[in-house]
Image (tube, rainbow, N blue to C red; front, side, top):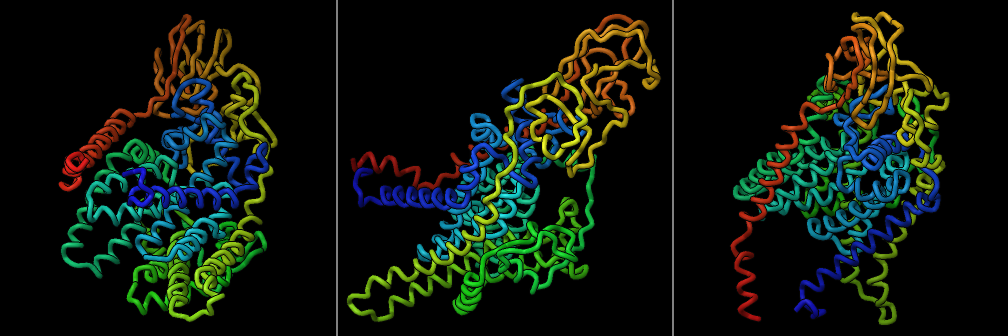
Length: 599
């Protein structure tokens, strides 16, 4: 049966391969400059993302440890609770551990482009009933707009998790009919957490919440009950599966909060400029951020189709994509009073840590892409009613694709002007040095390579306000100093025999002439433990109080949430497996028997 080219399974497989191939070509064209500059790393925030990636690569490959701590930044800070850490994603590991940071990150971009393109194409075909040309155009707008180009090319690697949204929506809708798809919803939400999606994860909750409310308002009673079931099971399963990431992140944010006041405001005219400006000054006064945070180029042609798509959708009473575009446009416009959507959301827990309302443009663009696809699809339907000369019948099938490809070319030309910039140094090939804190004057040019060099820095390009020691020292000098029992008065006469460190361990071999304190040249954090003596933090530094004599002390950073968060995630895996097994529809359980009988 599978060999029959007319069988439904064979046709579905061929369609899947065609979508995958198209997605790869689309992503390959947009991100070709990154691979062409194979020996170069990225610009903007990529050096920070390269640094965090290197923390994981070095920790796992050099020491065989998970990167719970980051000894290479800010004098040493927690990495397990870092909201933007991506090293714990299995997909991240598959791409970065074999290929290294600079190539792994480029493959990471391409992977997400494929996911986003294929997912949006399927959303267009399955949920919005778009034509192939319409779905292709929608997928192009979603993955290649100025939002994607600026943020992904500029180093916002955690924003790549937005590309999971189409598949998240497909699973969310499908779960109403088949509860097993709640496992897919929870798995995607958890993967976004593992990818450091500090924006994509909370935005996803708003995205699914909007979709649910919009469907409830138009739904029948039984559909509402199914949707509520989907929401409850998906939420509980996500809490279980994702505990291994959301628990340490929430603990870190509660210990070191970062409330942000952001009152940036955009007018509709300014947003139209964001959609249509192919070039712009880097600074956009009076707005506080650079143009890369605002540019969302789709072009006038796409906007014309969106406007037509709105009219056609309203005429067909397909209100959801129109409402979605307008709803998230309101978020994009920023703060227009205490009752404006952005103001209300920013007052809620966790969302108060986020800023830049222009980033909601990602969801506005998703619905805009579907509306443009609606317009092109209805144009294609309209062509079927037109009479063509016998020699011009080819135009009926070709014209929609010419429109789609023409608009695609316009979007891609703008995107390639942005993605064609990979001019950073090679990352991850520095020879390891004796561990110390460096005092480099070229911090932003060098810190991506600090993990491979095995050095640290006092500089701290990090959004989380980690506490830092005030008396750390720089240079290739001994990394342990000694003090009297008060922990602050320096003294001589003690001996450091050996010092070594891995990602989250520090080993010292010291000999004290009298009871005192051995101080390690890194930050203290309450989750550090010592194998001997008594922890005695000294001016924010890791230190241990010891009696006289020779001692070998192993310090180990042990996340205090790890035992119960890991067990909770394991419970989520078991719960997901049970749902997949026990919630199989009766017909699918009986299918194998029927197949054997007929064969």
